[in-house]
Length: 431
Image (cartoon, rainbow, N blue to C red; front, side, top):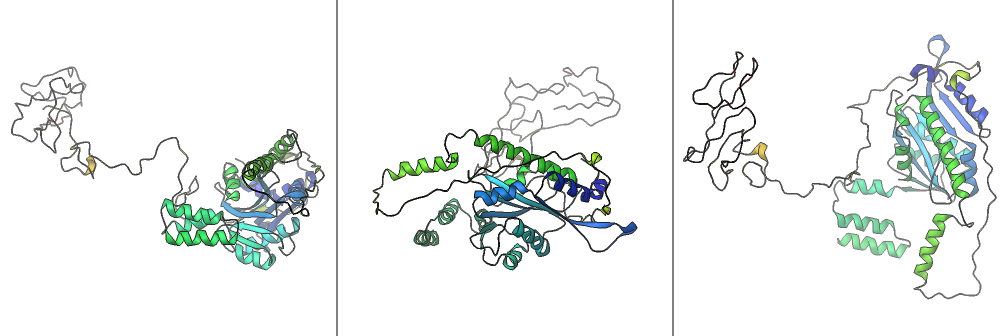
C-alpha cells in the first residue's frame, strides 16, 4: 500500500516526474506557508490536469462539466475533488482532480481557479456546470466564473426531496419535469406534479485507489486514465463512418421517429458539421520512485490526521429510495408471520408462547402448534416426545434434566437412545 510518510516526503519529486514525462500538463503542489521542524513544509493540496485532457476538452467535448468530491478511505485522509465531462461519443471523460484536506470554499476556489486556466473557461460564458451539494463550491464559481450556467444534479435534488416527499408517482413526476425540453412542457409537468451523476461514476471507478497512500493512489488513477485513453483510441479505429457510434444510434432512433412526422423544408435552412483534425497524444513512461534522481526540493511532511466521527465506511451511503444492486429479491412489502403460532403481525421472538424446544408438544388449537405425530423423530441424544393422550388437557409439558459436570444424570424410565458412552461434561435433555 506504500509508505505514508515516505510518499509525502517525495511528493514534489513526483510532481517533477509527471511534468517531465507529460509535457504541457499542469501539476501543482500546495504547501502551508509556515515551516515545521528541520525546515520541512506541510502538505496542503495536490492538483493534476494532463495535457491530453486539456486538448480533448478544447477539441470537441461538450462545454458541460460536472464537479464533485469523494472521501479518501485509507491512511491518507482528505478528499478528492474531481471534474469530468462527456466526450463526443457521450461517454465520461475525467479532466482534472485534486487531493485536499477538507472540502470548503477555499479549497474549491483554488481548484476552480486552476481549472479555469487549464480549460480556458474565461468568465464562464457558454459553459454549464453541474454539481451536487458541495460545501463552498457555489461561492467559488460565482467569484471565478460569474457568467457560467450553474445547475444542480437532479439525482441529488430528488434525494433531498425524498426525505419528506416519497412515492413512485411523485418520483416519475420529478423526472418528467427534469427531462422537459422546452419551457411550456416544463410548466405543464410542474402543474401535473402539483396535482399529484456523471461525477459519481468517476468516484466509484477509482474506489480501490482511494484506500491507498497519496502517490500510490495518484499513480493508480494515472495508469487507469492512460489505459482508458488507449482504449478510446483503439475504439475510434473500429468506427465505420465519421459519425460517433452513440450519436449514430441517437440519429437512427430520431430518424425512425421522424418517419411518423410531416416535415416541411423552407428551402433556406441547412445543417453543417465541422470535422476536427485528430489529436496527437504523446505519452512517455513515468519512472519508479526509486529511480527518480536526487533533487533539491524541500522535504514535505503529511498533514495532521483528522479523526472522522463514527466507524470508517467502505461503501457509499445509499440515498433515500435508492436500491442496491443485488440478485436477491427484496422482502419489502411481505407480511410478517410467526413460526410458532402462525399468526400475523409478529415473529417468533415476540410470540407470547415463546420459541418451542425440541420435544415440546402443544395441544391442538387455533393459536397453537399441533402435536408431533408418531413418525416424528427427535434429534440424536434426545428422548422421544409423548403421545397426544399423555398431553391431554395440558398446554405443554417440558422437563429438562439439570446439568452436571459429573456426566449425565440417570433418570428413571428414560430411554437412553444413542446417548451411551458420553464424555464427561455432557448434558441430557429428558421429556
